[in-house]
Image 1: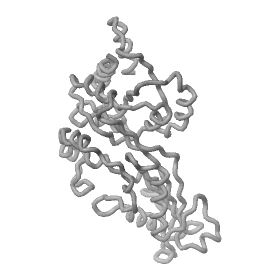
Image 2 (image 1 turned 60 degrees about the vertical axis):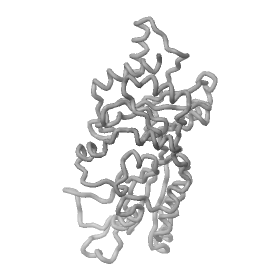
Image 3 (image 1 turned 90 degrees about the vertical axis):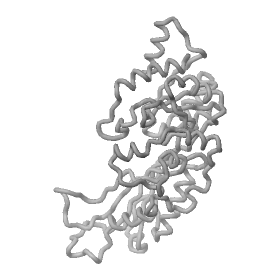
Image 4 (image 1 turned 120 degrees about the horizontal axis):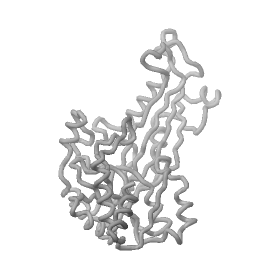
Length: 335
């Protein structure tokens, strides 16, 4: 809406964008944009361009707009650990039949150390390191860790004291959710038949989504699991002490534009009046590598939503002030 309102505002003032402007909306990003590559290929001539400015994501905690030259990649992995073929009474069978919820918990704990560092072998071996200029850009950003820890009620953070901005250029492993049997009023005295966790692997430049999933599978196998991609047969259940079903969604890789790219310099210059902060990469993920792969075009992401917008959670919100400023920012980029 900010983009369209900015176009209307320029028209009302009798002004035009400083370049040939194409506006592109795609509504499947939260599903991994499965049709984006084919769409860009089909309309390659229409969408041919010198660069893409993507409006997405939250500001710096100070409220300053972010100009991010890169985004992380992403791939989700569902891991199910199997137990008995039917739920069992926890009194009659406890301490004898392995509980898949406990087994899964132990498996997940093996994936990170006590400081939150990922312990999957080779997880960051193929990372393309930041340049010194990119590191200097990060060091120039106002520190916000203390503010965020206070806002979020955090007594500690992962990474042995590493700052948030230094953590973003590293690949991460997150547990999106865990499910096994029931809790609260619905809890029953049972050993459940299975336990499932959905993992979110964030990728940085150099990581490949398929390679990263393969590393995770090797780690699971190293913990003594027989890994399959479907339901275990009775023969498999009897043969293997520990079985895990692992399925990955179609993932996508990270993308990063050089600080020296004309598009990057142009957008940063346009947003100087708004005290914008430039970062080599945002922590979020977008399938922007497809624009370079299919169209040979660089991308820059401008983030304008309030940083406390509860993104992906209950009561996701946008401050009206951020919407009004987004209109002004969009118009500045166009001009």
